[in-house]
Image (cartoon, rainbow, N blue to C red; front, side, top):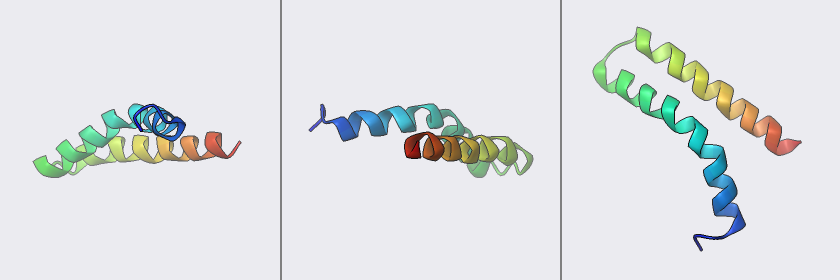
Length: 56
């Protein structure tokens, strides 16, 4: 199961988004509203580009 194609492709799509996900979590838990905007934008941008590249 660990070597299946779906797992490898899913990991390749999620791995670049781990940084913004962690930054978003830290901003939410720390209560810093202004620190929330940049990682949220990066996460949305990365998700959209992954969806566009996957659809192509």
